[in-house]
Length: 304
Length: 103
Image 1: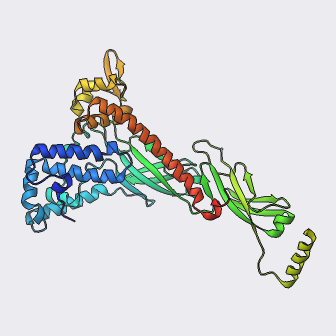
Image 2: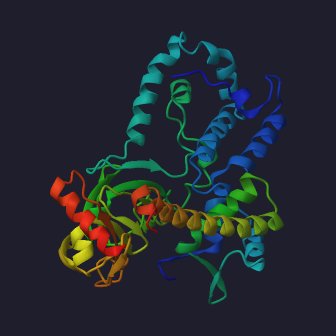
Image 3: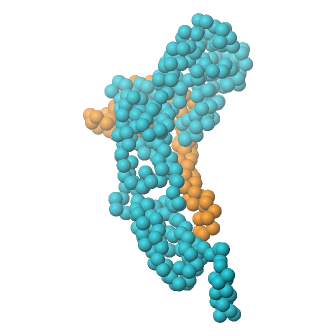
Protein backbone atom coordinates (compact mmCIF):
# COMPACT_ATOMS: atom_id res chain seq x y z
CA UNK A 1 0.00 0.00 0.00
CA UNK A 2 1.51 3.30 -1.05
CA UNK A 3 0.98 6.87 0.10
CA UNK A 4 -1.10 8.77 -2.45
CA UNK A 5 -0.36 12.45 -2.95
CA UNK A 6 -3.84 13.77 -3.72
CA UNK A 7 -2.57 17.30 -4.31
CA UNK A 8 -0.23 15.99 -6.98
CA UNK A 9 -3.03 13.94 -8.57
CA UNK A 10 -5.14 17.08 -9.01
CA UNK A 11 -2.12 19.26 -9.82
CA UNK A 12 -2.82 21.78 -7.05
CA UNK A 13 -0.69 22.97 -4.14
CA UNK A 14 -1.46 22.51 -0.48
CA UNK A 15 -2.84 25.99 -0.14
CA UNK A 16 -5.44 25.40 -2.88
CA UNK A 17 -8.90 26.79 -2.13
CA UNK A 18 -12.10 24.78 -2.49
CA UNK A 19 -12.68 26.51 -5.84
CA UNK A 20 -9.16 25.68 -7.06
CA UNK A 21 -9.80 22.03 -6.21
CA UNK A 22 -13.21 22.02 -7.87
CA UNK A 23 -11.81 23.58 -11.03
CA UNK A 24 -8.82 21.25 -11.16
CA UNK A 25 -11.08 18.24 -10.64
CA UNK A 26 -13.50 19.26 -13.35
CA UNK A 27 -10.75 20.00 -15.83
CA UNK A 28 -9.14 16.59 -15.29
CA UNK A 29 -12.48 14.78 -15.11
CA UNK A 30 -13.46 16.19 -18.50
CA UNK A 31 -10.35 14.57 -19.90
CA UNK A 32 -10.46 11.20 -18.16
CA UNK A 33 -14.12 10.61 -17.29
CA UNK A 34 -15.21 7.06 -18.28
CA UNK A 35 -18.25 8.48 -20.07
CA UNK A 36 -15.89 10.30 -22.41
CA UNK A 37 -13.43 7.41 -22.73
CA UNK A 38 -15.49 4.31 -23.40
CA UNK A 39 -13.63 0.99 -23.04
CA UNK A 40 -10.43 2.76 -22.01
CA UNK A 41 -9.10 1.04 -18.90
CA UNK A 42 -6.22 3.49 -18.48
CA UNK A 43 -8.54 6.50 -18.52
CA UNK A 44 -10.86 4.72 -16.11
CA UNK A 45 -7.98 4.07 -13.71
CA UNK A 46 -6.80 7.66 -13.97
CA UNK A 47 -10.32 8.90 -13.32
CA UNK A 48 -10.53 6.74 -10.19
CA UNK A 49 -7.43 8.48 -8.85
CA UNK A 50 -8.80 11.92 -9.71
CA UNK A 51 -12.16 11.09 -8.20
CA UNK A 52 -10.55 9.78 -5.04
CA UNK A 53 -8.37 12.88 -4.72
CA UNK A 54 -11.44 15.06 -5.15
CA UNK A 55 -13.37 12.95 -2.65
CA UNK A 56 -10.75 13.74 0.00
CA UNK A 57 -9.72 17.27 -0.85
CA UNK A 58 -13.21 18.64 -1.49
CA UNK A 59 -14.41 17.43 1.90
CA UNK A 60 -13.02 19.75 4.62
CA UNK A 61 -13.09 17.02 7.28
CA UNK A 62 -11.33 14.43 5.13
CA UNK A 63 -8.87 17.00 3.86
CA UNK A 64 -7.97 17.95 7.44
CA UNK A 65 -7.37 14.32 8.38
CA UNK A 66 -5.35 13.74 5.26
CA UNK A 67 -3.19 16.83 5.83
CA UNK A 68 -2.64 15.82 9.45
CA UNK A 69 -1.97 12.10 9.12
CA UNK A 70 -1.68 11.38 5.40
CA UNK A 71 2.10 11.17 5.10
CA UNK A 72 2.48 9.29 8.39
CA UNK A 73 -0.41 6.92 7.89
CA UNK A 74 1.87 3.96 8.57
CA UNK A 75 2.53 5.23 12.10
CA UNK A 76 -0.92 6.52 12.88
CA UNK A 77 -2.24 3.84 15.18
CA UNK A 78 -5.73 5.25 15.24
CA UNK A 79 -6.11 4.38 11.61
CA UNK A 80 -4.65 0.93 11.84
CA UNK A 81 -7.78 -0.84 13.07
CA UNK A 82 -9.99 0.98 10.63
CA UNK A 83 -7.47 0.25 7.93
CA UNK A 84 -7.66 -3.49 8.27
CA UNK A 85 -11.44 -3.30 8.21
CA UNK A 86 -11.39 -1.11 5.14
CA UNK A 87 -9.09 -3.45 3.31
CA UNK A 88 -11.19 -6.50 4.08
CA UNK A 89 -14.32 -4.78 2.92
CA UNK A 90 -12.64 -3.58 -0.21
CA UNK A 91 -11.43 -7.05 -1.05
CA UNK A 92 -14.86 -8.55 -0.61
CA UNK A 93 -16.28 -5.88 -2.90
CA UNK A 94 -13.76 -6.60 -5.60
CA UNK A 95 -13.98 -10.37 -5.80
CA UNK A 96 -16.24 -11.25 -8.66
CA UNK A 97 -15.24 -14.87 -8.74
CA UNK A 98 -16.36 -17.51 -11.13
CA UNK A 99 -15.90 -21.15 -12.01
CA UNK A 100 -14.09 -20.89 -15.28
CA UNK A 101 -11.18 -18.64 -14.38
CA UNK A 102 -12.73 -15.56 -15.95
CA UNK A 103 -11.92 -12.12 -14.64
CA UNK A 104 -14.62 -9.73 -13.54
CA UNK A 105 -14.47 -6.09 -12.72
CA UNK A 106 -17.00 -3.50 -11.67
CA UNK A 107 -17.70 -1.15 -14.49
CA UNK A 108 -17.74 2.41 -13.48
CA UNK A 109 -14.87 2.65 -11.03
CA UNK A 110 -16.13 5.53 -8.93
CA UNK A 111 -16.55 3.31 -5.88
CA UNK A 112 -13.22 1.61 -6.35
CA UNK A 113 -10.88 3.46 -4.04
CA UNK A 114 -7.24 2.74 -3.32
CA UNK A 115 -6.04 0.76 -0.32
CA UNK A 116 -4.57 4.00 1.01
CA UNK A 117 -8.00 5.66 0.95
CA UNK A 118 -9.63 2.62 2.57
CA UNK A 119 -7.05 2.58 5.35
CA UNK A 120 -7.57 6.27 6.13
CA UNK A 121 -11.29 6.62 5.63
CA UNK A 122 -12.66 3.07 5.82
CA UNK A 123 -15.46 1.89 3.58
CA UNK A 124 -17.38 5.13 3.59
CA UNK A 125 -19.84 5.78 0.85
CA UNK A 126 -18.63 8.24 -1.69
CA UNK A 127 -20.59 11.47 -1.92
CA UNK A 128 -19.86 11.55 -5.62
CA UNK A 129 -21.94 8.44 -6.21
CA UNK A 130 -25.16 9.80 -4.77
CA UNK A 131 -26.55 10.78 -8.13
CA UNK A 132 -25.89 7.36 -9.60
CA UNK A 133 -27.27 5.10 -6.94
CA UNK A 134 -30.64 6.72 -6.44
CA UNK A 135 -32.56 4.60 -8.90
CA UNK A 136 -30.97 2.38 -11.53
CA UNK A 137 -28.39 -0.15 -10.32
CA UNK A 138 -24.78 0.02 -11.44
CA UNK A 139 -23.65 -1.95 -14.49
CA UNK A 140 -21.00 -4.62 -14.16
CA UNK A 141 -18.40 -5.37 -16.80
CA UNK A 142 -16.75 -8.72 -17.18
CA UNK A 143 -14.35 -10.45 -19.50
CA UNK A 144 -14.89 -14.09 -20.33
CA UNK A 145 -12.07 -16.09 -21.85
CA UNK A 146 -13.00 -18.84 -24.28
CA UNK A 147 -11.00 -20.91 -26.69
CA UNK A 148 -12.00 -21.26 -30.31
CA UNK A 149 -13.37 -24.77 -29.76
CA UNK A 150 -15.71 -23.45 -27.01
CA UNK A 151 -16.91 -20.68 -29.31
CA UNK A 152 -17.71 -23.23 -32.02
CA UNK A 153 -20.69 -24.69 -30.15
CA UNK A 154 -23.59 -23.14 -28.29
CA UNK A 155 -22.93 -23.98 -24.66
CA UNK A 156 -23.79 -22.93 -21.16
CA UNK A 157 -21.51 -21.66 -18.45
CA UNK A 158 -22.18 -20.81 -14.86
CA UNK A 159 -20.41 -17.73 -13.63
CA UNK A 160 -20.55 -16.14 -10.20
CA UNK A 161 -20.95 -12.41 -9.93
CA UNK A 162 -21.02 -10.91 -6.43
CA UNK A 163 -21.82 -14.31 -4.92
CA UNK A 164 -24.73 -14.89 -7.27
CA UNK A 165 -24.60 -17.76 -9.76
CA UNK A 166 -25.55 -16.76 -13.25
CA UNK A 167 -26.08 -19.43 -15.89
CA UNK A 168 -25.50 -18.01 -19.32
CA UNK A 169 -25.91 -19.46 -22.77
CA UNK A 170 -23.13 -18.55 -25.15
CA UNK A 171 -24.34 -18.83 -28.74
CA UNK A 172 -22.06 -20.57 -31.22
CA UNK A 173 -20.10 -18.22 -33.46
CA UNK A 174 -19.37 -15.55 -30.88
CA UNK A 175 -16.57 -13.29 -32.08
CA UNK A 176 -13.41 -12.21 -30.28
CA UNK A 177 -14.09 -8.81 -28.66
CA UNK A 178 -17.87 -9.19 -28.96
CA UNK A 179 -19.90 -7.93 -26.03
CA UNK A 180 -23.24 -9.26 -24.79
CA UNK A 181 -25.57 -7.64 -22.29
CA UNK A 182 -27.35 -9.58 -19.57
CA UNK A 183 -30.17 -7.30 -18.62
CA UNK A 184 -30.78 -6.96 -14.89
CA UNK A 185 -27.66 -8.86 -13.76
CA UNK A 186 -25.86 -5.75 -12.53
CA UNK A 187 -26.21 -4.16 -9.11
CA UNK A 188 -29.72 -3.93 -7.68
CA UNK A 189 -31.69 -0.75 -8.28
CA UNK A 190 -32.97 1.38 -5.42
CA UNK A 191 -36.29 3.16 -4.85
CA UNK A 192 -37.96 0.67 -7.20
CA UNK A 193 -35.45 1.29 -9.97
CA UNK A 194 -34.31 -1.41 -12.36
CA UNK A 195 -31.15 -3.44 -11.76
CA UNK A 196 -28.07 -2.55 -13.70
CA UNK A 197 -26.88 -4.82 -16.49
CA UNK A 198 -23.97 -7.21 -16.78
CA UNK A 199 -21.81 -6.68 -19.86
CA UNK A 200 -19.64 -9.61 -20.86
CA UNK A 201 -16.86 -9.12 -23.36
CA UNK A 202 -15.50 -12.29 -24.91
CA UNK A 203 -11.82 -12.86 -25.37
CA UNK A 204 -11.26 -15.82 -27.67
CA UNK A 205 -7.91 -17.53 -27.82
CA UNK A 206 -7.07 -19.77 -30.72
CA UNK A 207 -4.90 -22.80 -30.10
CA UNK A 208 -5.93 -24.65 -33.25
CA UNK A 209 -4.31 -24.86 -36.66
CA UNK A 210 -7.18 -22.86 -38.10
CA UNK A 211 -7.27 -19.14 -38.62
CA UNK A 212 -10.64 -17.51 -38.28
CA UNK A 213 -11.85 -14.56 -40.28
CA UNK A 214 -15.47 -13.82 -39.53
CA UNK A 215 -17.27 -17.08 -40.20
CA UNK A 216 -14.58 -18.54 -42.43
CA UNK A 217 -11.67 -20.71 -41.40
CA UNK A 218 -8.30 -20.95 -43.11
CA UNK A 219 -5.72 -23.68 -42.86
CA UNK A 220 -2.75 -25.10 -44.70
CA UNK A 221 -2.46 -28.80 -45.48
CA UNK A 222 0.75 -30.47 -46.56
CA UNK A 223 0.62 -32.96 -49.40
CA UNK A 224 3.53 -34.98 -50.73
CA UNK A 225 4.96 -34.35 -54.16
CA UNK A 226 3.68 -37.62 -55.59
CA UNK A 227 0.07 -36.95 -54.56
CA UNK A 228 0.37 -33.41 -55.95
CA UNK A 229 1.65 -34.70 -59.29
CA UNK A 230 -0.42 -37.85 -59.69
CA UNK A 231 -3.50 -36.95 -57.67
CA UNK A 232 -4.95 -38.86 -54.76
CA UNK A 233 -6.70 -38.40 -51.44
CA UNK A 234 -5.84 -36.63 -48.21
CA UNK A 235 -7.60 -36.61 -44.86
CA UNK A 236 -8.10 -33.14 -43.45
CA UNK A 237 -9.15 -32.03 -39.96
CA UNK A 238 -12.08 -29.64 -39.66
CA UNK A 239 -13.76 -28.43 -36.47
CA UNK A 240 -16.61 -30.85 -37.16
CA UNK A 241 -14.38 -33.88 -37.76
CA UNK A 242 -12.14 -35.37 -40.40
CA UNK A 243 -12.91 -34.98 -44.09
CA UNK A 244 -11.47 -36.92 -47.04
CA UNK A 245 -10.44 -34.72 -49.94
CA UNK A 246 -9.60 -35.58 -53.48
CA UNK A 247 -6.42 -34.03 -54.79
CA UNK A 248 -6.45 -33.45 -58.51
CA UNK A 249 -3.45 -34.61 -60.54
CA UNK A 250 -0.90 -31.84 -61.18
CA UNK A 251 -1.99 -29.79 -58.19
CA UNK A 252 0.27 -26.76 -57.87
CA UNK A 253 1.87 -25.62 -54.64
CA UNK A 254 -0.35 -23.10 -52.79
CA UNK A 255 -3.50 -24.23 -54.57
CA UNK A 256 -6.50 -23.08 -52.57
CA UNK A 257 -9.75 -24.95 -52.28
CA UNK A 258 -12.97 -24.12 -50.51
CA UNK A 259 -14.99 -26.50 -48.36
CA UNK A 260 -18.45 -25.03 -48.28
CA UNK A 261 -20.14 -25.02 -44.87
CA UNK A 262 -17.09 -26.34 -43.03
CA UNK A 263 -16.20 -23.00 -41.46
CA UNK A 264 -17.39 -21.39 -38.25
CA UNK A 265 -21.07 -21.23 -37.23
CA UNK A 266 -22.81 -17.96 -38.02
CA UNK A 267 -23.72 -16.17 -34.76
CA UNK A 268 -27.38 -16.70 -33.82
CA UNK A 269 -28.19 -18.34 -37.17
CA UNK A 270 -28.62 -21.97 -36.35
CA UNK A 271 -27.46 -24.39 -39.01
CA UNK A 272 -25.56 -21.72 -40.99
CA UNK A 273 -21.81 -22.02 -41.32
CA UNK A 274 -19.04 -20.17 -43.06
CA UNK A 275 -16.57 -21.93 -45.35
CA UNK A 276 -13.17 -23.48 -44.84
CA UNK A 277 -10.33 -22.49 -47.14
CA UNK A 278 -7.50 -24.96 -47.51
CA UNK A 279 -4.15 -24.18 -49.03
CA UNK A 280 -2.12 -27.13 -50.24
CA UNK A 281 1.55 -26.94 -49.43
CA UNK A 282 3.47 -29.38 -51.54
CA UNK A 283 6.30 -31.05 -49.65
CA UNK A 284 9.42 -31.75 -51.66
CA UNK A 285 10.92 -35.12 -50.68
CA UNK A 286 14.26 -35.10 -48.85
CA UNK A 287 16.91 -37.72 -48.10
CA UNK A 288 16.47 -39.30 -51.53
CA UNK A 289 18.15 -42.62 -52.22
CA UNK A 290 20.55 -42.93 -55.14
CA UNK A 291 17.90 -44.78 -57.09
CA UNK A 292 15.31 -42.06 -56.48
CA UNK A 293 17.80 -39.41 -57.59
CA UNK A 294 18.44 -41.37 -60.77
CA UNK A 295 14.72 -41.59 -61.43
CA UNK A 296 14.31 -37.84 -60.96
CA UNK A 297 17.18 -37.25 -63.37
CA UNK A 298 15.50 -39.53 -65.87
CA UNK A 299 12.30 -37.59 -65.35
CA UNK A 300 14.08 -34.29 -65.81
CA UNK A 301 15.53 -35.45 -69.14
CA UNK A 302 12.04 -36.12 -70.44
CA UNK A 303 11.04 -32.49 -69.90
CA UNK A 304 14.12 -30.88 -71.46
CA UNK B 1 -48.24 3.09 -15.83
CA UNK B 2 -46.26 0.26 -17.43
CA UNK B 3 -43.51 -1.21 -15.24
CA UNK B 4 -40.71 -0.32 -17.61
CA UNK B 5 -41.41 3.40 -17.35
CA UNK B 6 -40.48 5.96 -14.73
CA UNK B 7 -42.27 9.29 -14.59
CA UNK B 8 -40.05 12.21 -15.49
CA UNK B 9 -40.95 13.88 -12.19
CA UNK B 10 -39.74 10.84 -10.24
CA UNK B 11 -36.60 10.71 -12.33
CA UNK B 12 -35.85 14.36 -11.60
CA UNK B 13 -36.46 13.84 -7.92
CA UNK B 14 -34.30 10.67 -7.69
CA UNK B 15 -31.43 12.16 -9.65
CA UNK B 16 -31.83 15.69 -8.30
CA UNK B 17 -32.03 17.31 -11.73
CA UNK B 18 -34.29 20.06 -13.04
CA UNK B 19 -37.21 19.13 -15.22
CA UNK B 20 -36.17 21.84 -17.67
CA UNK B 21 -32.89 20.02 -18.26
CA UNK B 22 -34.67 16.79 -19.22
CA UNK B 23 -36.99 18.83 -21.41
CA UNK B 24 -34.04 20.46 -23.15
CA UNK B 25 -32.41 17.08 -23.76
CA UNK B 26 -35.57 15.98 -25.49
CA UNK B 27 -35.80 19.17 -27.53
CA UNK B 28 -32.22 18.63 -28.71
CA UNK B 29 -33.21 15.12 -29.78
CA UNK B 30 -30.82 13.55 -27.30
CA UNK B 31 -33.38 11.47 -25.39
CA UNK B 32 -36.80 9.97 -25.93
CA UNK B 33 -39.72 10.80 -23.65
CA UNK B 34 -42.93 8.78 -23.69
CA UNK B 35 -46.18 10.70 -23.17
CA UNK B 36 -49.23 9.00 -21.64
CA UNK B 37 -52.31 11.01 -20.65
CA UNK B 38 -50.35 14.26 -20.64
CA UNK B 39 -47.72 12.80 -18.33
CA UNK B 40 -44.18 12.21 -19.46
CA UNK B 41 -42.18 9.07 -18.79
CA UNK B 42 -38.74 7.66 -19.41
CA UNK B 43 -38.24 4.07 -20.51
CA UNK B 44 -35.92 2.03 -18.23
CA UNK B 45 -33.91 1.05 -21.30
CA UNK B 46 -33.02 4.71 -21.87
CA UNK B 47 -31.97 5.37 -18.29
CA UNK B 48 -28.33 4.47 -18.82
CA UNK B 49 -27.96 7.02 -21.57
CA UNK B 50 -29.84 9.72 -19.67
CA UNK B 51 -27.72 9.07 -16.56
CA UNK B 52 -24.65 9.65 -18.71
CA UNK B 53 -26.01 12.95 -20.04
CA UNK B 54 -26.88 14.02 -16.50
CA UNK B 55 -23.31 13.28 -15.36
CA UNK B 56 -21.86 15.23 -18.28
CA UNK B 57 -23.95 18.25 -17.39
CA UNK B 58 -23.95 18.23 -13.60
CA UNK B 59 -20.60 16.60 -12.81
CA UNK B 60 -18.51 17.95 -15.65
CA UNK B 61 -20.32 21.23 -16.21
CA UNK B 62 -20.86 20.69 -19.94
CA UNK B 63 -23.67 22.63 -21.57
CA UNK B 64 -26.26 21.19 -23.94
CA UNK B 65 -24.41 22.17 -27.10
CA UNK B 66 -21.33 20.45 -25.73
CA UNK B 67 -23.34 17.35 -24.83
CA UNK B 68 -24.75 17.26 -28.34
CA UNK B 69 -21.27 17.40 -29.88
CA UNK B 70 -19.96 14.80 -27.43
CA UNK B 71 -22.85 12.45 -28.17
CA UNK B 72 -22.07 12.65 -31.87
CA UNK B 73 -18.37 12.06 -31.29
CA UNK B 74 -18.99 9.19 -28.87
CA UNK B 75 -21.08 7.46 -31.52
CA UNK B 76 -18.20 7.83 -33.92
CA UNK B 77 -15.79 6.46 -31.29
CA UNK B 78 -18.11 3.50 -30.73
CA UNK B 79 -18.22 2.71 -34.45
CA UNK B 80 -14.48 3.12 -34.77
CA UNK B 81 -13.85 0.83 -31.81
CA UNK B 82 -16.06 -1.83 -33.40
CA UNK B 83 -14.10 -1.42 -36.63
CA UNK B 84 -10.76 -1.71 -34.79
CA UNK B 85 -11.87 -4.98 -33.17
CA UNK B 86 -12.96 -6.33 -36.56
CA UNK B 87 -9.64 -5.28 -38.12
CA UNK B 88 -7.64 -6.80 -35.24
CA UNK B 89 -9.50 -10.06 -35.68
CA UNK B 90 -8.73 -9.92 -39.39
CA UNK B 91 -5.09 -9.21 -38.65
CA UNK B 92 -4.87 -12.43 -36.68
CA UNK B 93 -5.11 -14.23 -39.99
CA UNK B 94 -1.76 -12.82 -41.03
CA UNK B 95 0.07 -13.36 -37.78
CA UNK B 96 1.21 -16.85 -38.72
CA UNK B 97 3.70 -16.62 -41.56
CA UNK B 98 2.80 -20.04 -42.90
CA UNK B 99 -0.78 -18.93 -43.48
CA UNK B 100 -0.02 -15.33 -44.37
CA UNK B 101 2.20 -16.36 -47.25
CA UNK B 102 -0.71 -18.05 -48.90
CA UNK B 103 -3.32 -15.30 -48.75
